[in-house]
Image 1 (cartoon, rainbow, N blue to C red):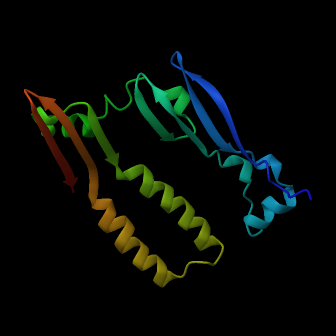
Image 2 (image 1 turned 45 degrees about the vertical axis):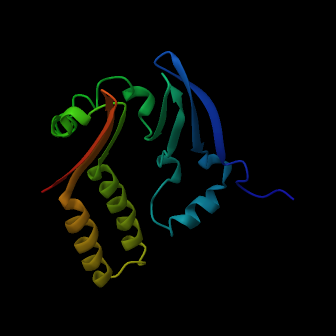
Length: 168
């Protein structure tokens, strides 16, 4: 039987800065207009505007995973290395800054959640009481975590490791 949207998740190779990564994305056109409108609860939203793309692969011997629709345009443009929070975090790591760096900035994720909770509120799925709790735990509590950076370095036969969480 033919199931609507069964081929909606697509994967293709993309060239990025002289290398190749995989891109997985949702092809909203694989669903009928009627189905897409059902998801938006009759609100004037076009699901095809929601560009969700996952990039992954090994690039210069580093595993890269990115959930960003503009990743191809911003990759290798110095966007992270120019970020003042990233620079601040690297400075805090000192001698342990090395081969394995993890950096997480909470702001994009919280913005993502705020967008979708807004849609849920418009659809009547979220009450004012729910919003009070959401604002307390997500925006105020998790929003106070500016960034987390951790790294490991191997020097002179010793494994150095450090982590820094900036809270505002």
